[in-house]
Amino acid sequence: MRRDTEPITNVLQNWKEFAGDLKDKMTNEEEASKRKPFKLLGILDVRNTPCARESILQGAGGSLVAGFGYFLATSRVRRSFDVGMIGFTLTTLVSWFHCRYNNAKLRIQQRLIQDSLQNKVVYEGTGLDPSQKQGRGSPGSS
Image (cartoon, rainbow, N blue to C red; front, side):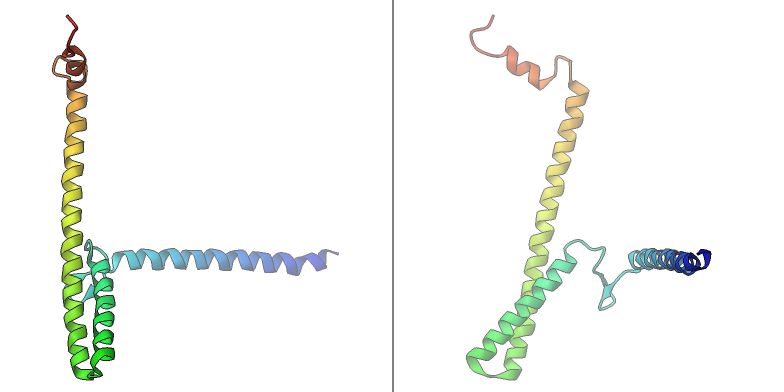
C-alpha cells in the first residue's frame, strides 16, 4: 500500500516545486518590467509620464476616426492618411494638454487642502481657531 501513495506524493511534491519556481519567475519578470521603461520614439517614457498613455491611445482613436471618415467621404487613400495623421496629432495634443491642466488643477487643490489641514491642527484650541470665531460672532449673543 505504501507503493501506491509514493507516486502521488512525488507528483504533488514536483508540482509544488514547479509552482514555486513559476511564481518566482513571474515575480522576477514583474519586477523587471516595472524597472524597464517603455519609451515611445526613444524620448517619451509612456509608463512614468502622467497622461502620456491616455493621450497616445486617444490620438490613435482620433486618427482612425478622422482617416476612415475622410476615406469613406472621398475615397482618396493618400489624403485620408494625411487627415488621419493630422487627426492623431491634434487629438493627442488636445487630450495631453487637457489632462495635464486637470492634473495641475488637482495638485493645487490638494496643496490648498493640505495647508488648510495643517493650519487647522496648528490653530486648534487657540483664539485664532476659525471654528471658534463662528460661534462667538453670532448676532444676539452678549
